[in-house]
Length: 308
Length: 92
Image (cartoon, each protein chain N blue to C red):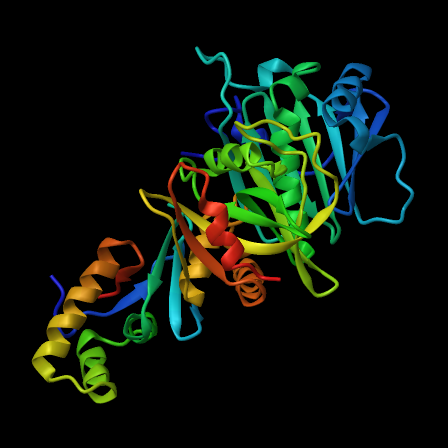
């Protein structure tokens, strides 16, 4: 099927460059993972909703001390999108080119362009629904995935739980047990950074997990400190009847991580870069397969196999 | 039907990397990832560079201590697996 055909009325008219009519003149800067995401062209309603959602991560200005990505918000007519029986649809299409990515979803079109600096834009017909229907957050996740890759890191579909002086990262596809292990860990007094998306990258030659404002079934964890945590363990999850842990060989480790690197792992123009980053992660903290039962005792095994 | 003269190339959406002597292959359209062992890497390397099946059989026979009949059976079966997985496609 043609890119965007299930979302855009005339896919051939997908924006070829980042221009259009802004919704308004509001700007919200969202700070996390050592970066500023500068959202421009917002209506007053959109800006207010963003501030409510991202809370203390928001400000009106960037001080220029952190890397930043601009995300411009443009208005388009509802008639530009396919009208059918769907009330809503959270899926989206991605279209890859060497220096650009197209995004098409329900009531949204988006672009990431490298000029050579990464910049993003989204076109939507939704005002208040921009945040409530996760249009903005889904676009932000894609932007963060590519921004992290540029910075030598990766956005990983994972749960991260804080441990003494660091955090353990648990990854796997949907259903692998990320939310379950988050609940079990939380019941034992661990703080959950996110049960859905975390960023891994190297800071000062140490692999760290960055807390991101992206949560899954478990919900946000406001009690967890912002910032980054040294990775003490990197675990591919498997559910089983008994606890077991084993270290993966390099190729299997990279393959396991690759499966959980959303948005970038199907991009043919970023494949080599992604594999290089993932191979480096495994060298720094070897990936282990953690088979766990639902009794919460998995932490004892982790403690005995921890990277300090 | 694969025979000794069949030649292959990697499919356009398949990306392949050697990591520590093993290989990972990603079929990006489907989002599938395969891990290959050392022998699998050698076979794919040869097939992907246009070697006919017979040449791969000969190379494996020379590289590893394996008789010709076993090498032929294993290479044929493995090429069929890669073909069905969408990693390689027939050139001839």
